[in-house]
Image (tube, rainbow, N blue to C red; front, side):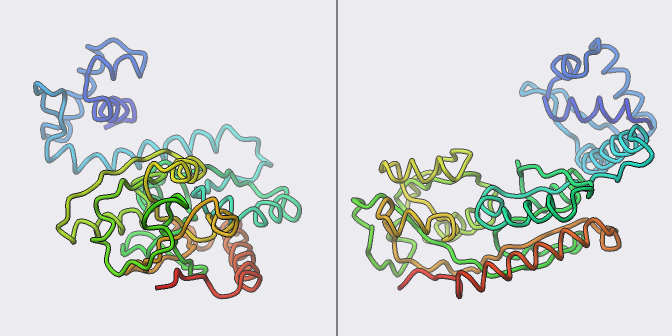
Length: 306
């Protein structure tokens, strides 16, 4: 088994097409097919089925997929590490969700830049569930706002409790009302940045449990786009209170006074084996200090009144 074979396997799994995978890799299609056949022979198991809907992973292919992602990622990290100058500090790949970066971690970024300018870190936005990104080693650690993850294969620490606010346009019939049950807004369009957000998944699960007809979900890709869309009457949204505090204070958004049945936290997850990394220890300690200072400034986390 080699990296080229795994690259071909992952490209077909992603595109569901041998032809498209060949284009992505800059190879001839027979080369991609040959690499996957060789991989199947080595593993003595079929990995992909050709169907009318495109190439589909077999059960064996699904089991291999996560391992292949990790092996390819580690290979890239090894190549990059060898290519770096000998005196350059290895980079720590940090993922951070938009909300926590914008409203909680700006002081952390400033602190690391001023106090630890030589610290080898790379900050990137999250494009998928943070636990999955860490598990697949696409990032070393991730900061986000959401419910506590329940998973044994990544490390985790809650840094501060956060509150959530359900918001609508000020003219919306539910704005300013106390809502006792999610059934009362089940028919509304839910606007969110990403559906993989833990609190968005929690909200959708709560609505699914009401048995009421769903109003649909519109994912807009960013918190700012969500706030603009909701303000213009597109639907309603559940967001961390810290992200809508100014809009609620200024009357640009109206609160729907509903208390979610789950708690969320500003938190960090990281891959096993990172605990002894001095760069990570510096980042996590600084994040704890920054969020503790923010909690002292903000006071107790705000909760929507019921």
